[in-house]
Image (tube, rainbow, N blue to C red; front, side, top):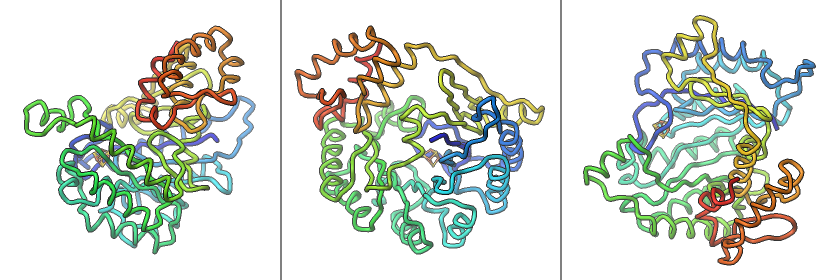
Length: 379
Ligand code: SF4
């Protein structure tokens, strides 16, 4: 499932918790679009084997930042050049990340015409207090309206992001946030625990005592509530933060988690091919200036066996399929397998991991701790 990721580094305002690469100044947007077009043309052979055998791609994902901020002319030129230089399978998944305040009916029509068939909408919460706390650019009315507009425009494959563990959010409110999506028939939910990233506004507020620190117990409780409610309503918990109805799992993310190659373009975007990764400079000005000179501002790294093993363990353990022992033995050898099984013993004993049919998986009580467990299984 090879795919393409495009990073659009502009936002209307800065959410207090966010540490992605973005700018709220729109001044360099025209130059950025030109630079991106140039990169799209220059990278056209990255994913294809040396033989020049051009296989169709399965996914295209525009993320950011806020891709829905781009106007019709900007989106038009980006999609045209993408479709000119890359080919996609007939059932390719084409996702655009959007914020509720951008998706007005006319814009939705445009997106459909441009081949977008999946929307990832940053709802985060339906409560005004939470949205203000996070400094989101939309309000609770817009959060509901956007889902109606998207469905009326014919979008079925919709995923909505929610955040739990927000200070002051009660379990009842969290339940109502989830149920709002369930009731509206949204087939995929991505839910994240509020995380305090260094140097974000939220980090500063907490350090200055203006905001209470994140309550881990509340986050764990709300995660359990999320797992229970989504299971009750027919969503499969296929990755720690992702819940989908059958047929609506994210193909793009499944590609990342199963080690498929992908090409990332735009500032800060990462690319991957077996045994190597590449990443663009996380600075929009430097990105534009470099592409003006005809140079892709990327660095590359050849991945060691140990890095590849660790990456596999981290991503596989987060999914409902877990770690495939046969894959570990065949790809990395008996030494890695033995060390992994030794480290897994304490979690098998305390019930956070289960070992069955040649796979190691997190149990319901281990899910919230999956990343910590994975790092204990690292080489
Ligand atoms: S809209 Fe998204 S990328 Fe932009 S600041 Fe908010 S969370 Fe970050």
